[in-house]
Amino acid sequence: MADNPRTMLVVSAHAGDFVWRAGGAIASHVLRGGRAVVVCLSYGERGESASQWLAGKSLDEIKAIRRDEATAAADALGAEIRFLDLGDYPLRESDDAIAALVRIMRETQPDVVLTHPLTDPYNGDHPAAARMALEARVQAQAIGVPTNGRVPTKEEIIGAPPVFFFEPHQPEMSGFKPEVLLDVTTGWERKRAAMESLPAQKHMWSYYTDLAVRRGVQLKRNAGPNLGLPVDVMAEAFMRYFPQVTDTLD
Image (tube, rainbow, N blue to C red; front, side, top):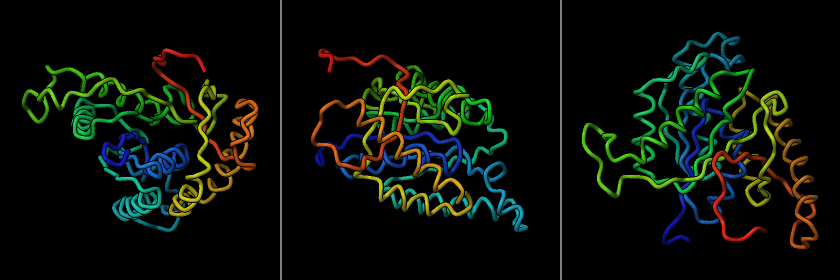
């Protein structure tokens, strides 16, 4: 796998979302020899940095703090990170933003894409990020869509990577069903370190630790008599957007 590493692309609305929702998946993927690239559409500077506003920080200072925190979190997971600085609350969809994602997809050639679900009544930035990621995936497959003002080469056109939606903070209200339970035990310590790189949202540390434990219990219950699973499994939940293609059912 190290000779031809699989690439995971994670499209995150804010600078911390990728850690809470998919940090275990990212770390486990990297530990297996894969490449992970995180794209933060915004820093979460307006809607997810209350402690910094209360401390009297300026907008530019908060952006810098969030950028440093997210970079440290990505380093802890072993991932690369890109920032588009599109602003949050609201995160607006735009042709320029989608074009930027198309360029990144063609550059990185992802084997799998992770992003937010299409429904979240508590945060419109999350569905906006998902819609842009899905639109970019379609455009990145089309040779007639230019890259940097030119026709892309055959090698730049991406395939059809599967898309997985990671778990929102309010899954029931967002219509989220845990269709895929991913064992992230091997990457858990890295995820914990990444979470601790985000002190602006310290209240999330215990929430997502508890959630990983619960999803781990569900994973073991649905895995059947698999004696290879560790006693304490940590897991993350995902929904699949496109059909799974397979020649066996297992």
